[in-house]
Image 1 (cartoon, rainbow, N blue to C red):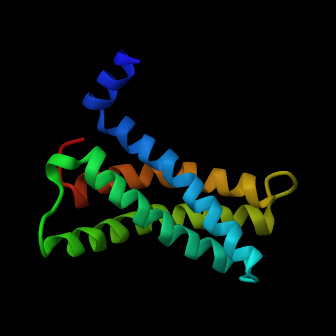
Image 2: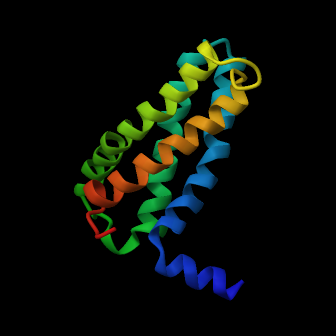
Length: 139
């Protein structure tokens, strides 16, 4: 366990991935809550993405990039930069979900598998852009 914690303290991509993993249940729960509430699957996916992105921004502020986070009035700007930077990953994420749910064959067109595939595609974009544009540290 100590080796895992030591690796996490040195490797920001691992910390970023941990926060992303914690954000997945938020994303999934909001997606299904919105679908259950009657929102169309594509609209539900967008709402879920914004909620999960906000959750992961908070986690990354305090865990992944704690020494580089904004303070005071700049916090809102940091959140907006995070959403802006991660919107590219969000387009990849939600776009993958949309393409799979609308055009792929079973089982890839199922809501849950398409969700996981989209999240994984978005992770690559989100880490790189968060590191370079939001929290502004070296990779």
